[in-house]
Each structure stands twice: as C-alpha cells, then as structure tokens.
Length: 379
Ligand code: NAD
Image (cartoon, rainbow, N blue to C red):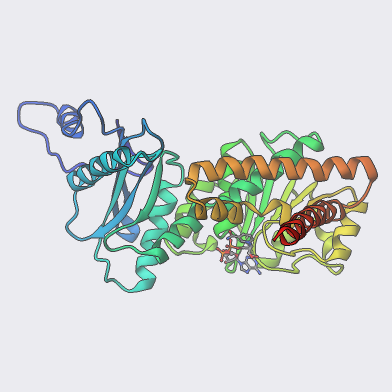
C-alpha cells in the first residue's frame, strides 16, 4: 500500500517516454512487494523545515510493527524497506508479538541539537496516527530522540480527550460541534485539540506565549499543529483574530482546556470564564477556591491527576515492555473508568470532583499500603 502522508509525497520515479506517469509511480511503489509485505510505505515531506522521511511497515501479522528510526544523509526507501523486513524476521524468530518496521530520516544526525529536535518532533507529529508502527532508537537517533517522539505522540492529550468524552456525556453535551478553547498549544494542548477535532469538536481559540488566536467558525487544527512543528508561533498563522495571551480565558466555549502553566485561574479571573467543562491538562491550573466557585456556577472541572494521567500511564506500560498501541488502549480504559467513577460520586453525593478524585486515589494508596504491610509481615 502506498501512502502519500498528509503533505505531497516526493516520488523520485520519473515517467518513461511511453507510459503515463501514474503507472510508473504505482509500479515503482510496488517494486518491493511480495507475499509478506510491505504493508505500508509512508513518505513524509515538510519542505519548510527540510524534513524528508520514509516509514516502512513491512508486516503486522504478529502485531504492531516495531523498529528503529535511522537518521543519515544517505538513507533510501529501499534501505527502509530492507531494514523493516529484517525486523519482521527478527521479531518473528524471537517469538515477539510484533511485526517489522523501520523509519529513515534523510538528514545529518550531527546537526545542531535544536535543529535535530525540531526535525524529529515534526517527524513524530507526522507518524502520530500510524497506530501500527512503534518507533525505537537506531543509527543517528538515541533515547533523547525517542523522548521527543513520545512527547509528540501525545498520550496525555489522548487521555484528556477520553476524560472529556465521559464528562460531556455526563452533562449531555454532544461532542460534534462542541466549541473548544486550548490555553497552551504545546505537547498536551495540541494533541487534545487534534483528537477532539477528529471527533467533530471545533477549536474556536488557542494560545501560546505569542498570544491568542480565535475564530468562532473554527480554526484549522492541522495547520496549527504543522505550524508548531516548524517551531513557529500561533500568531504566525494567517487566519483567525489575533488577541493577547490573557484573552484566551474569556472566549465563550463548551470545553476549556488549560494546558500551559499552574495557577492560571484564580479568584481574580474566574468570573471571565464562559464554559461548561474545564479539563485540566496542566497540573494545578486552578486554585482550590476557583474550583469551588466554578462548581457553584455549574461548571464541571475535571481534576488534573485524573484527566492528564495519559502520559504517565503510557510511560509505565512501555517501561514494562508494552507496546504504544497497548498503552493507548489502557490510557483510554483507565481514564474513562476513573472519570466515570469520580463523576458518579459527584452526582451521588454532591461533592466537588476534586474531593471525589482525592478519595478514589487515597483509597487506592491505602489498599496498596495494606498489601505492602502484609508482604512485610510475611517476610
Ligand atoms: P509544552 O512546553 O509542550 O507546551 C506548553 C505550551 O504552553 C507552549 O505552547 C507555550 O508556548 C504555552 N504557554 C506557556 N505559558 C503560557 C501562558 N502563560 N499562556 C498561554 N500559553 C502558554 O508543555 P506540555 O508538555 O504540553 O505541558 C503543559 C502542561 O501540562 C504543564 O503544566 C505540564 O506540567 C502539564 N502536563 C504535561 C504532561 C505531558 O505529558 N507533557 C503530562 C501531564 C501534565
């Protein structure tokens, strides 16, 4: 299968004199094809930052394809495919529940670190929706590069959207057409915006340190994500109204997502919020006083340590050798279950969501402590 991923793929396979161009492209694209694969070949190009990369997913019969990300100036599609095939055999022979894959990024790995980070983050953003490929370090990339990739793939934003989905159902708000505002269009904020937009919600405003950008008819989330991948600011986007950084607080919406700094909503500014749900992507973005006052106004606040736990769940699963796709399934399950438990308790007893969340977490810590004491006593 040949995929021109998002932006125009570059096919360096010119037409012959006798046949139409498309036939040559198809023929060239399938030149590696045999009974095992490749399952997908994805060409990625971002001309503005000089990113050219190929992801070869050879075979996924045993499970999601696993394989390194190689950065070098002299890589090729063929090399990506051949390395992916080697991974198919290696994983199958070792009895691992994984197929084979490999990525190559056409670049000099010795470039300045800030340029390398930009390139790898852009690459990671481009492969974010390839659920059947798990990247790892390889020639020219290391654990730091993998950190950038994991950060870009967005387990926290993904989990935040699971929490929002439960909350919006709890208050009878349809997700299709729901207006979303994101404060802090970074790793957490942009992925939350992306996953929400995929489900039909409309991003009406977003902010970063350059300021706020707003459009009641909806902003182009993919364009904003691409802009950030190039290391640029939201105010560089040609569309939308440009407002100050603080204006993001008062944009009318259904779902307001703080995903920047702690303590952004407090007694002095909470009256400016016009929303129905606040999903805490950032840690402690609201003061306790603000959470109490907003509950009194009927605003549903999803506590940080329930809603933004996606990243840490992913890290824990991957630490135990689980795949990224397995981790995302667990993120979805755990965050949905916890959010539902918290909101059921809020409905049953009338306590604040944070009070219900704290009880839930405290009870689990106590349970673990009881188990631990039992283990210690037995030794
Ligand atoms: P990030 O650095 O990738 O993004 C932060 C974004 O916020 C940037 O776009 C920055 O320009 C913007 N920003 C900074 N100050 C701002 C302000 N005053 N107003 C508007 N925008 C502002 O960071 P991140 O990883 O997305 O983390 C964001 C928040 O979420 C932090 O509070 C972090 O502790 C929390 N968090 C992150 C994760 C994670 O997995 N990354 C997990 C849990 C919680």
